[in-house]
Length: 131
Image (cartoon, rainbow, N blue to C red; front, top):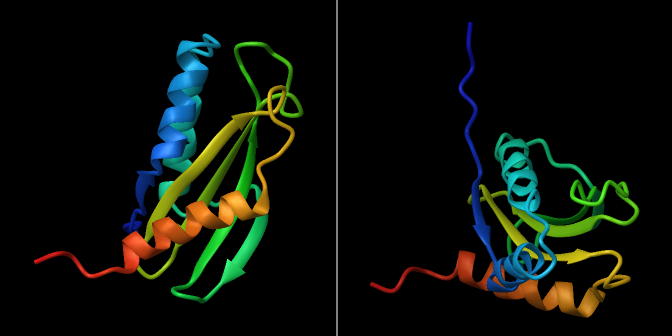
């Protein structure tokens, strides 16, 4: 007996898209898009991984994770790879990639920065459509 999996919809915050393009274009990290595609497949099926940074029910049930990915272009492993911060919004079944950074360039993303990105995404996802 097969069970159909309800997939999550994945959206990208403009900051994420901008940083991803910069890493691919300027740093020549050509394997990054494929790694992100693999991560999207995993997350769409509800297999969330990484470090849980926040769990809240306000304004809707959601969690924020930080996922470590190795940089396959440099073969330096996860410690010197990428960090992808993503939000899971459960009521609408959304995943929003908030930001990505290369650990060798940036030590960490501040909690305030991540919170600001998350608040903007949650506001957008929970606001009624303009009719």
